[in-house]
Picture 1 (cartoon, rainbow over the protein chains, first blue to last red):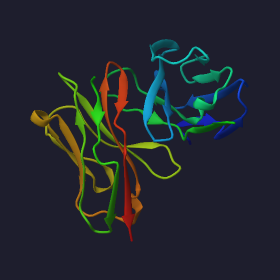
Picture 2: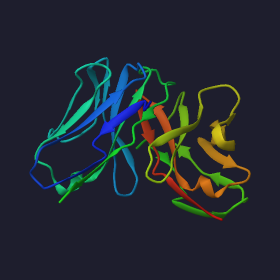
Picture 3: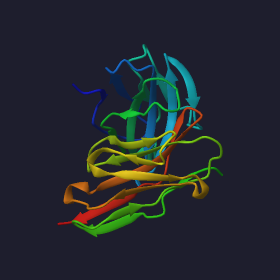
Picture 4: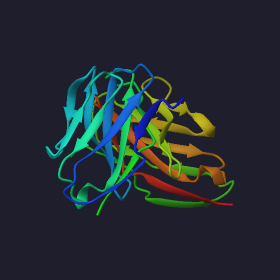
Length: 114
Length: 111
C-alpha cells in the first residue's frame, strides 16, 4: 500500500491554466505538507496543515491555494500557471507537528508549464 | 540567515570507496537532524535521524552520521559504497514545525 500518494504523476499544461494536484495519506498522520523541488533539486516548504488547519504558509503566491477536506487529504490548486511554476511538487505527512516526527513523502508530481 | 548547507554538490566515487557527505547548519538551540535519500525518479526516503543522546547514529543501508555540536555539523558516512547508492542526498533540520533542507548532494557511484 502506498503511504502517501499523489496524482497525477506528470502534469503538462499551458501558461494561464488552472490545475490541481491531489494528495492522500493512509498513515493516520495529523500533519501534511507541500514542498516544491526546483530544477536544481532544492526543496522548499510551501504549506503545512495540521488536522485540516493551515499552520505554515511560506511566502507562496496566492495563486497557490491548498485545501484539506480532512486530515488524510491535502490538495493543491494553482491558478493562472506561470513558467516559473514548473517544478516537482512533493506532498508529505508526519505523525504530528512534534519536531521529532519524520516526514513521509509522496512520489512527487512533475509539473511542466509551457 | 539561518540555513542548512551541503558543500558537496556532486560526488563521484568508485564502488567500495568510503563516503562522507558534509552538512552544516546555522540554527541555535536544540536541533533535530535528518538525512534523506532520493533515488533517481523516486520520492525522498528517511535514511537516519538524530534527536539526542549518542551523537553517532546508524541508519538504513549501512549509513551512519555523526552530530558534532561544536561544529554545527551532521556529516553522513558509509564505509563502502555500492552502485545502488547512486542518488541525491539531503540533509535537513526540523525547526518550528518545518523541515528545512540543504541543497542536496548528488552521489554517483561508478561500478
